[in-house]
Image (cartoon, rainbow, N blue to C red; front, side):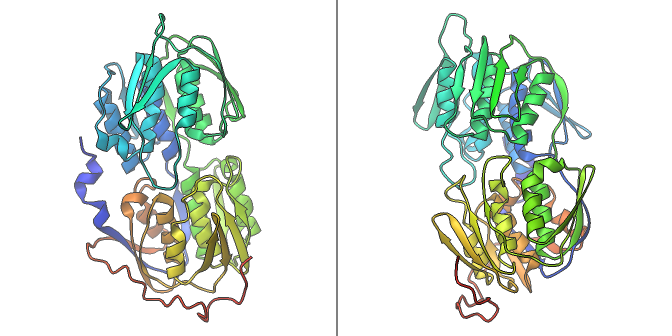
Amino acid sequence: MVCDRENKSDLKFQNFKINGNRSLKGQIKISGAKNSSLVLLAASLLSDETITLTNVPNLTDIDKMKNILKSLGVLLKSEGEDLVISPQNLHLCELPYELVNGLRASFFCIGPLLTKLGEATLALPGGCKIGERPIEEHIKGLKALGAEIIIEDSLVKARINNNEQRLKGTNIKLNCPSVGATETLIMASTLAKGRTIIENAAREPEVQDLCFMLNKMGANIYGAGQSKIIIEGVTKLKGCSHKVIPDRIEAGTFLIAAASTFSSITVSPVIPNHLDSVIEKLRESGSKITINGNSISIKTNSIKAVNIQTAPFPGFPTDLQAPFTALMSIANGQSKISETIFENRMSHIKSLNQMGASIVVEDNTALINGVEFLNGQSLKGQDLRSSAAITIAALAAKGISRIEGLEHLDRGYENFENKLSNIGAEISRENAKNINHESKLSLDKSNKQTKNYQAA
């Protein structure tokens, strides 16, 4: 099975052409949350009835998850803006390696398959190479619920081996508030016998969205959005209709793009309190932010350097660290950005420095001396958020940039270039198999545009 989007052309041979240093103005419609949609698709496996999801974004990652569900016997049908999911013919099978290897969210299926069918076999998950992102917390929790698990030949084999063929509720304390582990264990516990308590649970909005939909389906989940979640197991889950929450990371990316280009834009629909930490830092860095219902407007005339440290929700999101680094590269002053979630999430730094930024990385902390401007370059994004970061930098830079790595970008942003074009960006998608990645810009530290600061 091949994703429809990938049939159109090879994303690895596409690039953005961006003529930067343009002011943006207008309104951007925010799509449904990618990270919520993926787990909700997996959660649909728990029901014997039809699930209808609305506001599911059109992304390559979503296409992959749909194909995984189809491989498991699930029928999917698009009806206008609705995605109708019929899991009545769900069955076990060996999922194609190419489907699960490229999508970490494929591992979400283990909880529903195990608790509903009594066993599951999945390949170790793939996705962006931004760190180890171990699955130990998932495995430890599933074992605590009574699953037998063996990992061999890059496969995770799980089964229930008791007379009732049912997981049993228990107390689980996570070593870290992992979003993926929290979601996996919530789904597995919905059909378990008795009460499950998850302590040190993730509090992210996507976890809350999952719990909200599962409760619509007949689950009994309490404490979503808190560090202690209680699940009272039930024997069956029904169908429901559910609207995916807006994508806070997409909204944050566009707000940062507006700040980087000294622009005025409005993003909607959003849930503003999902972005509290981002709004706080944008205001601190000089942007004027106005919240009106489900919309956020930003106006930026100057950029002041601020420090950030990524943290689990409600802290500053790791998925916006790279875009915010692009903003700080042209801020007035020195800033320090510390990545505490993933150990390999600084791949954008090299590209930003090629554009004329002055950034040094020490122990997963970026020390940034703001420069007056960046220069357009030919660059390649290495993962989803680094691709977004260097696209933002290209929008702010003088001259023309060409950005490869769109196979990463299209995993998480729907109609990215069209949304930017509609508010004044000069950005277009091209097919180009031979791009010169060599920097045309001298990296001489004496570059006249670099402000005379010492690293913090």
